[in-house]
Image 1 (tube, rainbow, N blue to C red):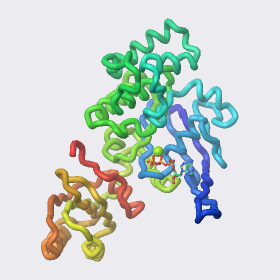
Image 2 (image 1 turned 60 degrees about the vertical axis):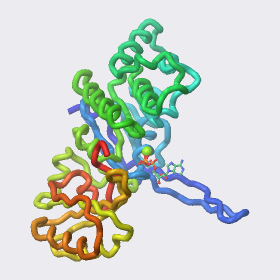
Image 3 (image 1 turned 60 degrees about the horizontal axis):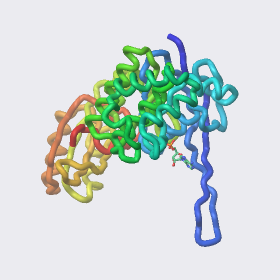
Image 4 (image 1 turned 135 degrees about the horizontal axis):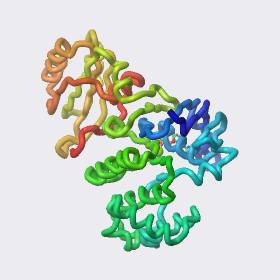
Amino acid sequence: MNEVVRTIGIYKDYVSEIQKGIFKKEKKIVHALRGIDLEIYEGEIFGLLGPNGAGKTTLIKILTTLLLPDKGKAIVLGHDVVKESVEVRKKIGVMLMGERSLYWKLTGRENLEYFGALYRIPPRELKERINEIADFIGLNDFIDRLVETYSSGQKMLLAFAKALINDAPLLFLDEPTVTMDPRNAAMIRRKVKELKKDQGKTILLTTHLMHEAEQLCDRVAIIDKGRILAIGTPDELKSTLKGMSSIEIDILGNRVDELISFIKSIDGVTSVAANYVRVDHRDAIRIRVLCDSPREILPEIINQIVNEKYDLLYINPKEPTLEDVFLHYTGRLLSEDTREGL
Ligand SMILES: Nc1ncnc2c1ncn2[C@@H]1O[C@H](COP(=O)(O)OP(=O)(O)OP(=O)(O)O)[C@@H](O)[C@H]1O
Ligand SMILES: [Mg+2]
């Protein structure tokens, strides 16, 4: 297997100044990346899965030469990202910052012409390439309108098109489906798969959606607080939880601390976490429980929920997902909402 990306011990800190009172400023250091080691192979879709602030965008910026690492080394398509940044940039396609990376006062086509010209693609070839991409992604209805008239989903589609303009063998997509409606998000996922299957492209994408990582990625690195916690195919990652089950519970209520403490105290429960979700247009609390034997634990939990007079919306034991792998490693939940179409 050909390696197209390798990182060795990448570290990156940000220093930000925080205003303390009127005259005083305090420096705060954020350790965004704390020793990232990974390899990505030719022809795979590789996912960086992690919650907000995990360091996903920082890593993509370093790999695409937009940011220098403090320490460590990254090789992309045989070139060092620091010493040979020009060569790297020629060979990669990048979707970063979505709609903010576009010129809103130009049409979609003009944007693609502009970015294509930066790669010195000859005009006639560029024209054809833009037509092909427009057909491939379905931009034809709006490509000749000013970008400022686009919906946010249409802007994201154009940002995706921009990443394809130089026909690069390696694509970096930073949260390509974020802010998209479910239909367009599903379409982008399909296109990412086609780029791999029909065009042999290698794709590194970031996401905080576990179902997206699970559906799309050949391999996933779970990243949290600047570190990679686990890396492997979705099945390999889930097999680290062999023999365990996961119970998802949605309830209506305000305080759940006591309920969570109770669930944690049950024998056989390994991890519990909760977050707020919208269920049928209502604010609900979703609790996730990782345990050994759901059959014994389920009645205890239901009893407690009924006794404490919570409104139980949904309770479902199931096979562990990547969300549970994250829960297992961190004791926290990754996603706000993993059920599509809600
Ligand atoms: N320019 C900056 N100055 C200071 N801190 C920063 C800067 N950019 C990022 N950070 C911090 O570095 C950490 C990693 O941020 P990063 O944007 O890489 O995370 P992420 O995984 O992409 O998150 P998200 O899912 O929200 O996009 C966060 O704590 C973030 O607040
Ligand atoms: Mg990000």
